[in-house]
Image (cartoon, rainbow, N blue to C red):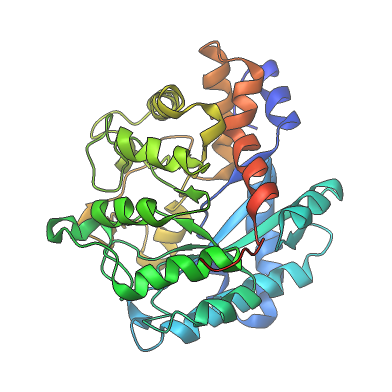
Amino acid sequence: MPDISAAAAALHEQSIVVDTHNDLLMLCVRRKPSEQGAYFRRVWLPRLRAGGVNIQVLPVFIDDDFRPEGALRQTLRMLETGWRIAAENTDAVRICLTGADVDAALADGLIAFVLALEGCEAVGTDVALFASLHRLGVRVASFTHFRRTMLADGSAEDGTGGRLTEAGIDAVAICEALGIMLDVSHLGAACTDHLLELATRPVIASHSSAFSLRRHHRNLTDARLRGIAATGGVVGINVLATFIDENVRTVARVADHIEHAASTIGVDHVGLGPDFYKEIAEELHGPAAQSMDGGGTVISYVPGLEGPGGLPLITDELLRRGWPDDDIRQVLGGAFHALFVRELGLPCPRR
C-alpha cells in the first residue's frame, strides 16, 4: 500500500474498485499458452490486489504487426488468453458475462473480469461478427484506437471530420441489441457525437480525461461528458500524465480531472479508467519507450500511478480534499459497478 492516511486505506479497502482499462492481456498473450495462467498469477494478480481492484475490464488491442490481415486471429488469441487465465486461476478471478455474474464473483471474493475490444479491426465491415465475439465473452467495444477502422475514425483523425461509416451505424444497433456496451474512448470527435446521437443504451468512455483541463484530442469536452451522462453512461478518468497535463505530473492533477468531471456530470457518472501502460511499453519497446501509436503522442506517467498498486493514492487525495466517503466510493467503482449490474450483457430488441 502506498504511503497514505489510515482513513484513506480503510476507505479504499471497503470500496468496490473498478478499473475499466488495463492492457495486461497484451503481455499475457506473448507467453506460451502453457505459461499464461502462471505468468498472470505471478506478475499481475499481486498488482491488481495491491490496488484493491475488484472489477477489471480487459481490452483486446491489436498491435500494428497484426493489422489488418492478422487482426481476427490475434483477437481470438487474446480472448482465449483471457479465458485461459481465468480457468487456471479460479480461486482469484472470473470472467463475467452479465451484471449478475459480476456480483456473484464479488460475493465469492474474486476479481471480476470483463472482456472488451479496443478497436474493431477484427470485424472489418462484417458487423455480424459481433454476435460471434459476444459468444466469446466480449461485453464492451470501442470501434477504433487512434486511427481509422472500417467502422469509424479515431481521435488522431479528427481533421477529417469523419462520422461513423454505414457499417459503424449498423454496428451500434447490433452491439446494443446484443448487450455489448459501446465505448467512445479513442473515437474521433465527430464520431463520438454521431454515436451519441444514435445511442439508445448507456455509453461509456473507458479511459478518457477532461479536455477543459488538457486540450488533447483523446480527451472529452464538457459537452461530450454531458452527452455520455445523458445516456446513463460513465466516464473513466485516464491517469496517464500525457492526457492529464503538459507539465504537471501529480496525483493532485489527476484529481483535478476527476473533480471537473464530477462537477460537470455528477459522481454517478464518473469512474476510473487508468490506462496503466508503463510495464506494457517497456516490455514491448524497451525501457526508453516514449511513443504511443497515434499522431506522435508521447507517453508520460504520474509518479506513483504507473500501475494498479497506486490507485489508493487517488482515494487519499480525494479524501484530503474533503470529498464525502460516498462520493469517493462512486468514483472508485460504485458508478461503473451499478452500470454493469444494470446493463452488462443484457440483450434488447433490435431497433
